[in-house]
Length: 144
Image 1 (cartoon, one colour):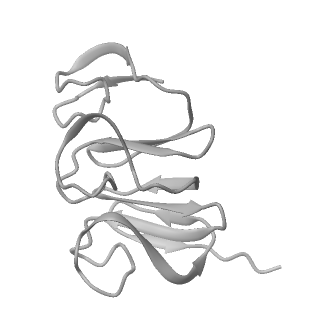
Image 2 (image 1 turned 30 degrees about the vertical axis):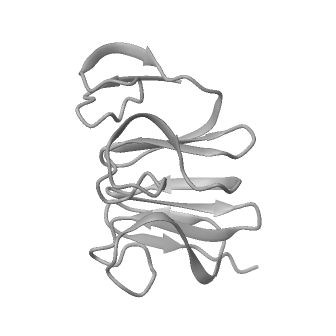
C-alpha cells in the first residue's frame, strides 16, 4: 500500500508525521483499506486488522487513546469487513457480528450511551455490514 498527503497525525502509516508529496510505502500485505478523519485502518489477507493515525478517541481499537504513526493491531479477532467514520471505526467479525470503537460523544457507536471506547465493542443483536457516514452509523438489512 502507498500513502501520501498530510501526515500530521500519523495517518500515512510510514512512522512519521510529515506531509508527503510522493507516495510512501506502508509495510504489510493488505486486502482492504479504509480512511477515517485522521486515521487509517487496513485488513490483512487473513483478517487481522491494523490501524494508525490519530487515536485520541480510541478509534485505533488497540486499547489506547494515543496517536500511532505506524500500524497497531486493533482487537484480537479475525475481521471480515471494516468501515471508518470521522473519529470511530466499525467492523464485522467472521460470524458477521458488528463491533464499533472510538468517539461515541454523539452516540455514533450505537451502544446506547455516549462513552468513548478504545477497544472493539459488540453491538448486541446486530449482524451484517455496518455502513458509516462522517459522524453516524447505520446497518442495512436486505429483505428477500
